[in-house]
Picture 1 (cartoon, helix red, strand yellow):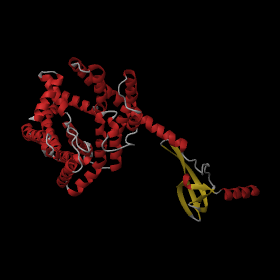
Picture 2 (cartoon, rainbow, N blue to C red):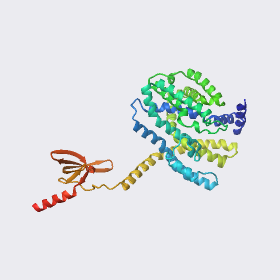
Picture 3 (spheres, rainbow, N blue to C red):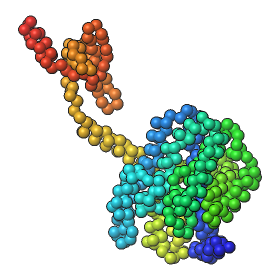
Picture 4 (tube, one colour):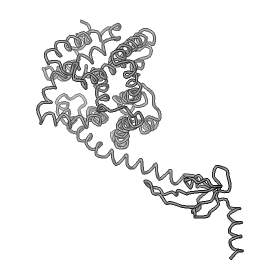
Length: 424
């Protein structure tokens, strides 16, 4: 009852009417969708394979680029604006060290995301996203080897054991808890604290691709199981012993309920297209939303409830506009980074010792052996560079090699030229 009384007192902050109560509850319990997102991430990463074998290198490259490029674009655009607003209004802006940590992430990678909090509170979640992208190939390989059912059991067991340790040994508490503990919420942000939820999402996706599982349940069945799970998780979150299982129950319950509520929209063409379009820009929206809301409340809304409601509409629309801008600029940022890296590489590349132009009859050293002679030269153009393939011969043996693997035998070549000149 003490917890409920505290919620009721806080629900008056946005006005004493049902709209205000609803917004207040959203502010109090919006964090529950963090674990829901972890569940959906496991689901979506499996579907991203499209039934094909997992190519680890290309998967990691694609996933990390999709996470980091919008993040870097947001940082490049946001930091100058944050500094300008901070100076103009004499309010908070990230200091040089935390700005550097944000712009160079993941150079300063750490699971808790502490270095990113000074820029944007929700950015603590980005290291968690990166973590799951990195461990997914390992989990996928284990699911093929052990079977998905066994992997789910092991992942849930590891998660429960870790969360027990996090509460009773490591001195931590979940991100939403208000009471103070020795280690704060840091023990609950590494991926292992949410591993079971992520793997359950993977299992749901595997079953879906096989035409079975909860994705094919009726809406009544999904809500019938999801709502009690959510209710139990909701109650458990208010108790220290409940922190061990509350997040997983909340995620599974919300997953079933939201699936039942939103699945009918997939059958409506316009609604489905709108949700797909919004989904494409949701990550950039997440990255930038706190900048808009935080500065809007600090600089304009302050304690004025009426301004808050007007500002809320502006924040939703304005943030989406910024998300569209970020997604439009991200390919240009990627292109600029790649071209800059290539230019720097060309400028700093060590000049090749064998920068000579290979010619037929040149005498060369190959792998420390002298006596090789070039008998044929082919020019090859690949991407943005040009190189030469040389056919070399020695004592009846013939090879095709890259010019970079050859060194002109200058002494013997000089002697050969002198002999040729004397014959003339």
